[in-house]
Image (cartoon, rainbow, N blue to C red; front, side, top):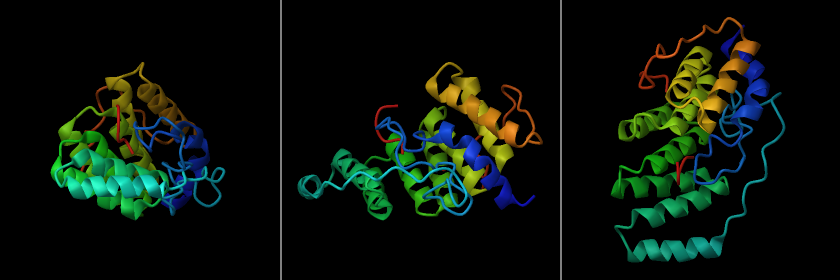
Amino acid sequence: MTKESVALGVAGVLFGFLTGWIIGAQQARPAAVPAPAAAAAAPAAPAGSGGPAAPAEPAKLDQARIDVLRKRAADNPRDAAVRAEIGNLYFDAERYAEAITWYEASLGLDPKQVDVSTDLGVGYYYANQADRALAQFERSLQIQPKHTKTMLNIGVVRAFGKQDLNGAAAIWQQVVDIAPESREGQAAKRMIEAVRSAHPETPSTAPGAAPGPAGAGTKPRENGAS
């Protein structure tokens, strides 16, 4: 079985569990994510061809709000928060290139914003840059090593951006080990079960045995409250 067929085969199983997580914590709504676990060839719509239903409609861009915030940003060249807010508006409208630009600007002013960092990583993923997304998530974990939503997103990109189901299960197991009763922990557990149900050959990962999420080359919004 090819890597592509593995990813497509498990996409439908995972869709229900993954929806909503990849957009991060700022808004707990199941956004256009039929995809975090995007299908092998469509990071912006993990559901990919032959996958689950089409994504929800993107939020309409509030251009008036954007104009107000851009003026505020121009008047306050050291304001990281306003730049992140502009990025959020573009992200929710699925205008990922603009979102990336503003998240990068925000992090350039305050690189310790873990949620903005993870949002940027998700933006890269939706912009078909899986490796860059994984690298950005590693930066998020350098800021906060046990940031479980970042770890969930890493698993999504490993599974669907890199077709690495074993690596995805390993990082999701870490989420379960860290916070088993949390929403993230419960979601990770269901994802692991879904992967193993669809692909029994995926090895089990004993608690505490999973490799660290910083694995080179295998690493995917999260802006707001964790």
